[in-house]
Image (cartoon, rainbow, N blue to C red):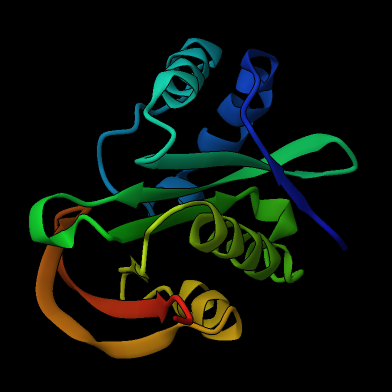
Length: 169
């Protein structure tokens, strides 16, 4: 199954709300997302992404057959890390384990490395999220280590893993 990444459209808010109203997806993301996630929440997020500085925020909808099925974004860091960016992503549960997320990650990393001065993209999946770790490994990211007791999610102290992909200079 092939996917494409594209800029968000306000009309994507309904599909986005359906995806993010799934607890299994939210349990693997950072806190702060409302639950259930409404179409209004989606409109606010998409508006923010569309108005963001395009040299700092690279945010795309993941689509297949012209339907939004997920999100992928790369976010520039600051100060001495200004040429480093953090990757975040999710895909609707019915598209898990189909290679779609790996393909979307490859697409956005290629885009960011070609369109910006970013030299390092990193991701910090929860250590228990083996599928997310596999996505990164299959997309060419290198495992750098485990960040022990690095987060509190759903009342539990958890480890995170650090992965990175470097721009070929």
